Image (tube, rainbow, N blue to C red; front, side):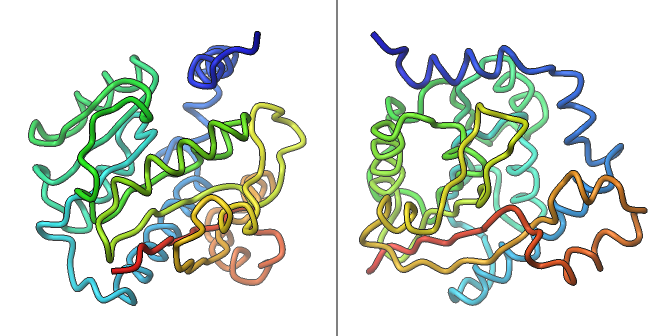
Length: 232
């Protein structure tokens, strides 16, 4: 019998080198990670402004797979209110770090998103950043997408940031092609932007050159930010 997908994800993360991950994704120590975060924030704000959102005040926002809370902190910096934010994280140790890092009104839930009691239609946006690529079971990917879609209010959307290419050095993740996103969210209007210079390339560059290289080397961008909008 195959391992249920949430447990399989836990097992895959348990195999990873947490110290190496901390260095690889540190905004302080890794200029490539900082550039990717800033580029993603600019694109996210641009997508939402184009959607007609002048600000994030009083908009309920939820992130699935919130990790240690970095993206939720970014939402606060963009103007979201703590009491309107929810983070769901499967791994207990990461949920604990997020709880310590974020203001108390931010709700942090530890567990499987598909069994978390979130009211249907209650969220203006649901974020899933490099989550779908970690779900290797196609059936669970579909269940996960249906769950997130239920939570979104009409006129809101699901914001997906994920790989568009496979990582040859990491068999624990799988790319999320545009065609698959269309199949996962068949009712949505999709607005997408290609982002993030391939990290192995970006890490080799001097920090001042990473941003310019990301603009010039568009074919080497490895991720896509997709805003899947639910019709009103």
